[in-house]
Length: 492
Image 1: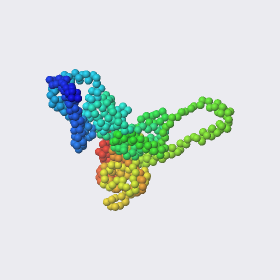
Image 2: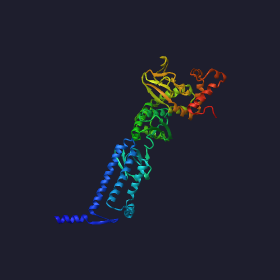
Image 3: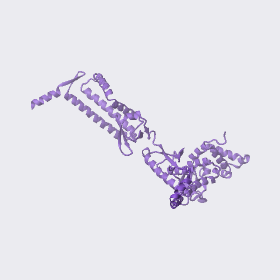
Image 4: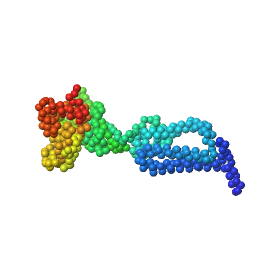
């Protein structure tokens, strides 16, 4: 037994390798490898401790934390490996030639691994893709969970973890939905029948978008007319969200809301149809009557009873169309608007519901929107004097003077009945509308200038100016609108 142990000792202590004048045995090599492996795990532990105890407290974003952690880990591994080798008496300069030869061999044999390694370094330090980002590469969508030197782990929407080689991110186009902020726009295609009223459709789509709580109000939703199909009109609803990870659930929720709005407004989804033209119907009629006249008569009766009645679907269309279009035309500022201008106005506004006694706008507050009452009743009253001024009902409007002149609210408005519905146009959307439709701005300026007594009571005009020039009010209104909304009324 002693002889066997002696032989084993001699084998493990026998010098089998000479590197730079330093001789190594099997035992020495094993101990060096063990120390390097230990250094690897210690470096990993130290980097994790730094990440959890220091980087997390500094509130650095998750992606940068991972990049710093990986950098610290590999720096510690490199330094500890150098220290171990130098402690063993190895002259590192003597390893340069050997490392070069080995590197060339590995470069040819392990090209993919080397490419993934370099790609991983690029991803970590370039920071265009970070841990926590929601990305799309090819048909793969998901959230980055970890970026390592060789590969990146992506968690899909089905909670599956996909390991992707880093080289794919360098060689292929990658969509980063979370880059430079967390807002993104999603497109929802919609097809409707050719006879659909475009105003009704626009209002339905925008209502569906605004009822979805995860859709941002700024930038506002938009409706785009994409093309004329063979049997349909093709539209797209564009909405902005700040949670890219949830874009599919949000898309589904909006589709549910669109279906509900279409059903309540009688908007039809197109179905493929085929038109048959009979060049000799009398021949077919003779064949049918010759076979069995009673069956032919029953078939005619059945076809007559199954004819679809357009009155049901068109009724809701007429109600919905007239409810907003006609109300807008009753307002003096919009009575001469074209269909295109009305379409743009409806697209810029939205419906808002108020409960009984809920304050709509308060006295002395800045004016940011004006309102049209679609249903319900509101009360205008003075809080300072504790006095009711007026009661407005369906079809009335308020708030336009303050919005167009930039003055604070002169009274408080509250809802008097349950579920009062108002059509709201905000200042920002009105500004975009006036920039797109100059003629509408001129119409508003002309109608507003006719309300001279109101402007005088607000202290915006004086009677002396009006007596000197009959166009003083119009000139003042134009200048006011130009300053407030950044437009150029009355200028060539």
